[in-house]
Every structure is written in structure tokens, then in C-alpha cells.
Length: 103
Image 1: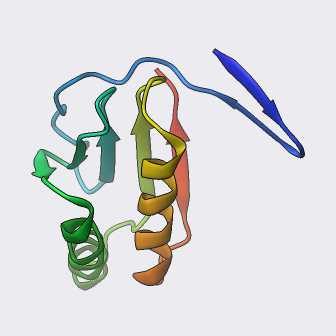
Image 2 (image 1 turned 180 degrees about the vertical axis):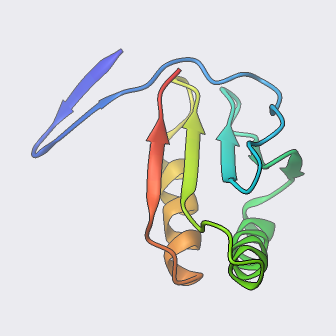
């Protein structure tokens, strides 16, 4: 699926409906087709927990001198609103290094 926006192109595949184990040292966020968010293998039950969850994960990675790059894996049926909340949570945690992963 490809959707063209002014100055931006997206092509998003199908993210799995349950999280995979993240790569060692990575900070991975998954969004499935029902907009369920996983931070690594932990389910984020609501958007209010997203912001402190991202902040804590970024903080922990910084303390361990690990990468704070966020790999964002999004199902093609997830909404852009959910994606924007994740990006906003990352920026509030002072992390703007986000990469989209296409499957």
C-alpha cells in the first residue's frame, strides 16, 4: 500500500499482531492492525501509558549507553494517529531518532 502526501511517501507492510523479541540493545515499538502498541515485548494498554513508557525506555537505554534509535514497526491497517502519538512521546523523551521498519 502506498499513499502519497505532499513531500512524503509511505509504504507500510503488515506488522505482526504480536510482538517479536527485540534485537539486542534495540528500542523497538510495534503497532498492530488494531492499534495495540508494544514497546519491545510489553503491551502498552492505553495511550496515557505510552508517554511514560517511551520516556523510561529511552532513559534506561541512555543509562546503559545503548542506542536510543526507535525502530517503529507499523501494520498497514494501523492509524496515523497512533503513529503520531508514538513520535510525540519519543520527542517528549528528547529522542527524535526514529526509523520506520517496513515488513
